[in-house]
Image (cartoon, rainbow, N blue to C red; front, side, top):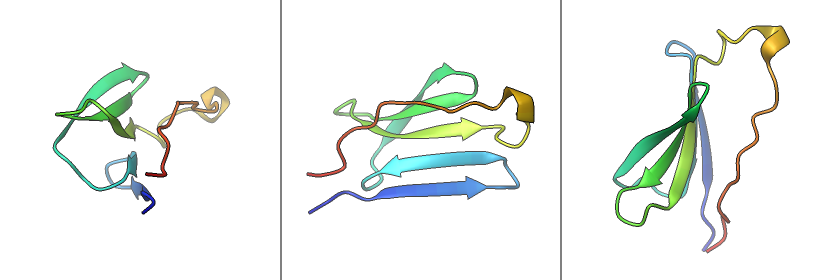
Length: 74
């Protein structure tokens, strides 16, 4: 069975979240510039990313956000 990647954007909260697989008890680690890595509490596996203040970033400061993602196949 393959894991799914879920992408959610909340315009009111100006929050973008990308999740890998099913939701598990997790915590967030700040990796800089309002970007957080979501990690499983038990295994420490990366379960996704959260990006805050998406719309508030100035257009001339926008750049690609590059992060390593785990394999989505299981």
